[in-house]
Image (tube, rainbow, N blue to C red; front, side, top):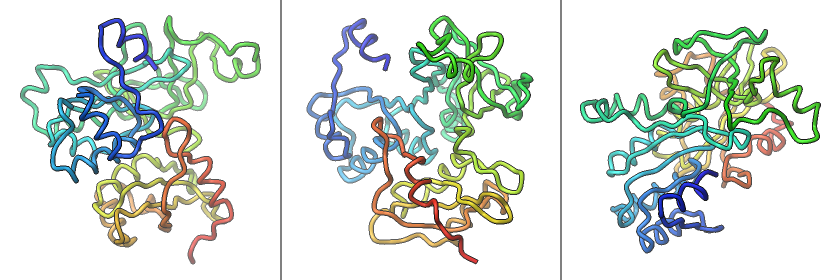
Length: 309
């Protein structure tokens, strides 16, 4: 949302793909127009990454990706980096006009760090941009430490951040705290050196037996499996645990990954009780107008889902 301003200010061409967001169409357009930097949501870049693999090369002149809208899987970032395309996570909201954090790596760090060390930072959402303040608070509104461990709802404040919604006092009262900070609806942690890590949207967290499960954490691991083209984790009702996660997968080709394979991958990163209770396969995931996975639609689709015994 900032590009219509920044591109003309620096004399850069601005190329719009319209509705042709599949990997092959994007590759051809970027190749012809010699697009150097591409900005968008992870679902778009998954298709482009697949076409780069099919073609065995990058589009002519392509050198960087900026990812926003939702968290990019580590496996996707690694694939771009290995093909010579740098990846920058950014985070923001319409209400912030629009940027809050930006994740270009410090030059001194990038020059000497290993790929694994770079990926550790690149999968985060970056550090705050000039003029934006960040804080995380608990359920009682008490600020939490920026130590990379504490988790809370993310609030922001700044000259370009809204102070209220037009002609909507109720929405304004829900969004703003007493000191003028705007509640983003994201659950996050912030490291001691200022790196933001979005854990999940508050509405997408899964509460199982009184404990929280991050759908993003599970999705980012599963996306590293070669038989998974895309996936989403949602909550379904459970009579004992209130909610349990299920994994919705779009297969990459005809092969269908087994639950035991997924469990084995996930157990390297999460506790056993966080594993999805089931896998469901679909031809495609529903998307919003901006290309994000619509978990609201998925939750409606699986509202009457019966978990296996």
